[in-house]
Length: 422
Ligand code: KG4
Ligand code: ZN
Image (tube, rainbow, N blue to C red):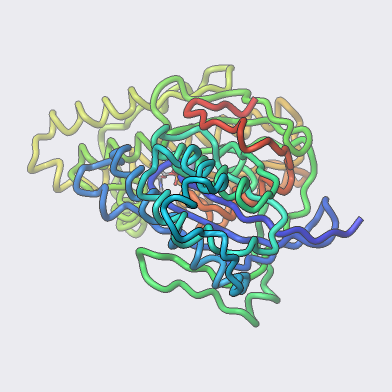
């Protein structure tokens, strides 16, 4: 059955405030995804000086930016509703009597700045022609998640629209299935305005044709897991990190090496300098848990090994050998991730391997995974998240919402910082 559905998605689990409005059409199995608007406001420049994400600072930024981003997203999508319902009552007394106003006060009571903006800018709007509101409700930083969740609850209440809660990791998984439609892109070039606010304007994706069962390697700043997927929304975590996530290891090792935050792109950029040089670091770093029969990971020991190595070398030599250490570290992480993913794929006889999460932007990881999969088997297909959609974004949340489609009453939705996929 063909259907057309517009989803407005909100993502605030960490340090990106993102809103997407996406229109899904075609069949449920292979829909087309037209991005009507997609805004990702990165807080990285703010958190950089602290060397990592500061949860309360992230919360404050989400609170400040959600309403303006929503208005911008509606405008970009050409869904802004010009007619104004005069439901904002003028006198203070009648305001207090207005039930809508009172309920919004309860929903956004802990986000006073967002409440103020909501009453002023969003309450007067007519509901836009949207079918559902999707929001990330976990896992992530609790203070950051709650802002997005309460914003979505307020919109669902105000516009009387279904609310779809989405697991952030399911979003990363589904981002691997979003493939840009080259034909559409040629007609509608992507617009990236500036580094702070990334606006990907009206372009189209297709959902990759793929077969179940699939195994997804999800690698982000907070998580590293191997997820078996037998149907849409049916996930089983078959392996995960026992300590640090892969992205976290990149960030910590970058700090040890005196590189900036986030560490992943910094390390891979430094390591890449070496692709032309044939020098091997004498000290080989460990490949933690590469031979264990389970599907788990551990990256904390690897980080400690880098720390000890740099202590032995001393600051001068460390600086000199930085690219070599970065490359050896990256090789180690990638080797373990790829080997264990392939092993899981064989054990569960999967037909598709998916790669998602911030670390999925890593060039070496992408190359190694595709190379080894294609050299080993012709039946297994690899689907990698687009580099621009590997990090946190709301389009992946809209896509996961479309496939999983589990609605909840706005009164019942709560953020869950430790939410799991299974
Ligand atoms: O998925 P994500 O954007 O946020 C979380 O949900 O955590 O992932 C962020 C992580 C950071 O740790 C960052 O260092 C890492 O992804 N990352 C990378 C690369 N780009 C981002 N790691 C390795 N190589 C990259 N190119
Ligand atoms: Zn993420």
